[in-house]
Length: 90
View 1 (cartoon, rainbow, N blue to C red):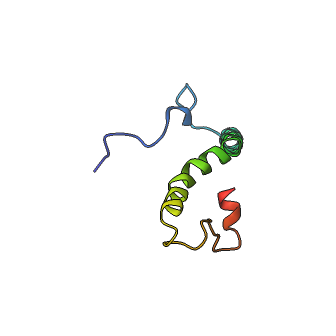
View 2: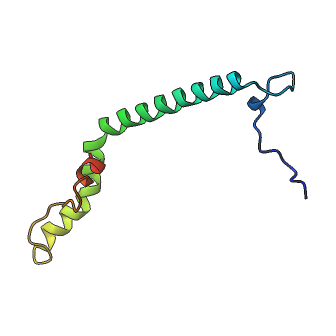
View 3: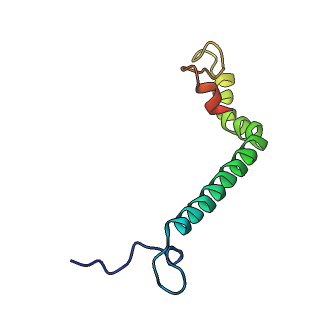
């Protein structure tokens, strides 16, 4: 059974329709890796820039519950359970 669509993208073949050589594939792989690294780096910079406001926004409902019902919790603080969990949240 033949699928009605192709899995190959239009960029996978040159405009002439002939197959790409190994060096062309490696060149395309290099450009995609560079774009991916740049996108991840840009995302990390944006996340680090807005880390504190987003964390305050997420922490506010928990702090409100702690203030209204001090009998529920002893101390109103987030805790990390693993050795690398602090790096995941900052």
